[in-house]
Length: 105
Image 1 (tube, rainbow, N blue to C red):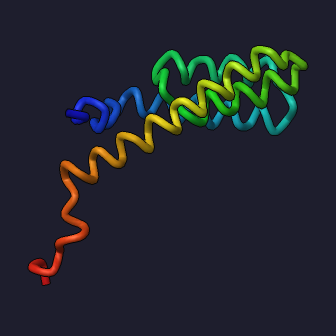
Image 2 (image 1 turned 90 degrees about the vertical axis):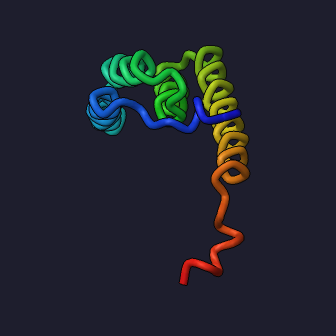
């Protein structure tokens, strides 16, 4: 069953992810790749399956000309995206009443 993958993060952890992502985005926009790297790594420490953090780490590492590590981060992000799609499909099967909502009028 995929229920374990469908739960949301703790509110405190979600707030930390949001905070570090926003700070990382600001550093990235200013081409301050060193500090952006630190912030996105902090996101991954809290949520290792955070697609955006891994994707942005790939972009940051490209900006730092570390193409080999950037590719690893993009591969990780791609794996997360594929897993998320799989679990969305699973959730739709387990909780999916979208196709049968005629009685809810």
